[in-house]
Image 1: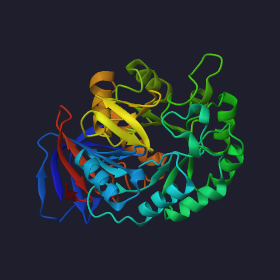
Image 2: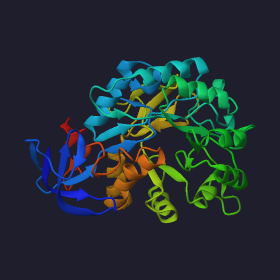
Image 3: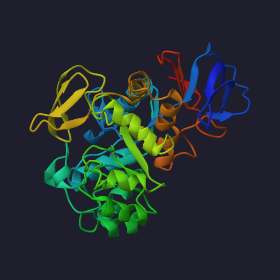
Length: 371
């Protein structure tokens, strides 16, 4: 495949006029494939990588069926999200085993590539559970994690914990070379979080949400992440979870090389207002806002990752070059997938998206084939 007459997004976060070649499903420096796409001045960006979302168009990753994953993969691909790392919820080990086994056995036939799993529960704090069910919350458990990882065939790329919980530091030390550890749904103060990051944790889940605020005398997880240069932080730019001024301040504080843009989308994404479920709990959706029926807590988002980019650029004044980095390169790096995905680089999987100057989707290519 040859994609010509496009502005190609490069690894140094710039757009340059150029031509993209894809041969045998990977980016190449030339191509003998006869298919030629004229991009007509479009932006050519890497396929997006969403490392934290739960579902869309009526399906949830925690449904634990091949059909649910296939539905999710097809919708995500249709929106330009070509690599997915969907998230679990706080459920019983039995339920999680089913979900992990289903994902581990899944065969990608079409749609976005299932490249990993984000294990968001159950090693969290009940005090900051958010939309997670309190019933199955438990202390960080190394052997439980390893059982689930084995069931997933090694697909778990992120494991979320609350670092203040009993056994958390021992957990980080034990698994830091097996999985990327993220801090989530936590009451941790700065010192506790910094200790965990110094031990080897390297990620912060949906920054600002389900954690203490960034206070001037107690900066909490946010401050600890800022002071730990190896840590990536997730940001939901849906226009609901975080005020635009805070999004801009976060880019100033962390830079566009450490922020990972995520959607945290749930099964209502791509559908109309109404009542849905998330982790077995009833959720009411009105516009972009999803809340638990039980207590009104925000329950994920109803916005896909490409729309988050559009919101960040058009409504929050984030440069397109920065937003793209956060939804592609940084995302892939944060879960150890940058050797295959996240940039238009020779040898990587040929996932590329064409956008017009208004950021409308013009084409999606996965592995050198147009979706």
